Image 1: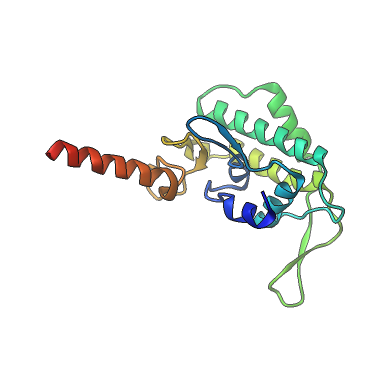
Image 2: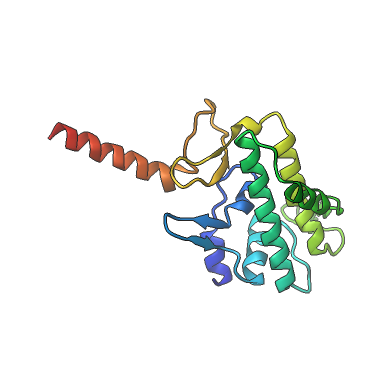
Amino acid sequence: MGQADAMNAFDRGAGSLCLDFVATLRDTSDQSVEMLSTPGDLAAWFELTGLPVAAGGLTVQDLHSAQALRAAVDAAARALIAGRQPGADDIRLINITGRHPTPVFFLSATGRAKIASAEPDTAATFSVIARDTINLLSGADLGRVRACSGCAALFFDRSPSGQRRWCSMRRCGEKAASANYRRRLAARA
């Protein structure tokens, strides 16, 4: 996937940085779709979310580290929302990743751009994701983390009622609404 395609394909509607990160692996009815298949895809996701990319670029090892962190975040979140204790390896990876210092940003002279104060390494960028995970999973709003009733993607329900059932209306909600409409129409006929 090219960088422009990646920027358009990434879904940022999960409601939190770490859940948007988890959404870079999409499960469809018959397969998983990997959105981070190259270091360039990972760099594009970092840029889209406002996270810094190391000046030297990203490596295949960085990509593997990202995929491992993503799997740990996904597994820990799913365990907790199901009322189970997360796996020790998942918790350990999230905690180790979160130990790294995070990037520091300052506003540019125009006030409309941010500048990293020093060249951050990839570990610092991953630390931002891990810390977001720690805050989300240990916070009072864990009950608002849900799995979509259409595709099972995780999302943080920020709706006023707290009753959202779909990852997004655009993707799964619209499909469910259309199916319900067709069922009602068929029942009337």
